[in-house]
Length: 150
Image (cartoon, rainbow, N blue to C red; front, side, top):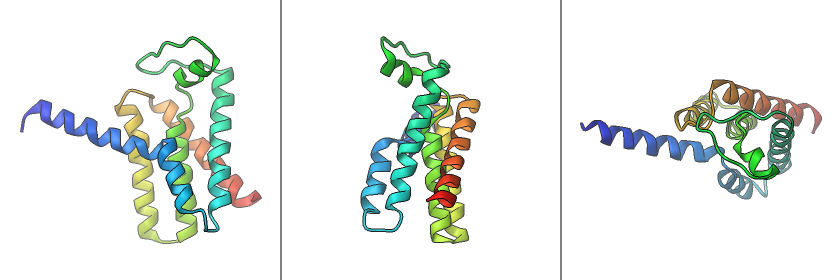
């Protein structure tokens, strides 16, 4: 196969995987769970991870691997890399759904999906390993809070 074709396929795959940690995917998951017992947990996880990332990025700025220019506070938050909000969301969702459905098969699928979506951020040069690891830790903290406090 042609090298450029494979690179394009990988780029498309990781672009699609990274969307699993985006706001649109999270909103759709929440919408489809609106009548379930997970709704409160999903909403808390969404707002907690976003607020934590905004707070951290507000005090600590770290350039992305592909540096992004910014002109104001909101753009500065978006241009900062640490921690990865996509990684935080996917890990939170994986842990929440694994606990809710209590299935080894689903837990394996959720784990692989969270790792792949998190790695996609590195492949797409939006984050480095430290950013993704920080996001994964944040997602785990959000899950612990949901599990033990809500």
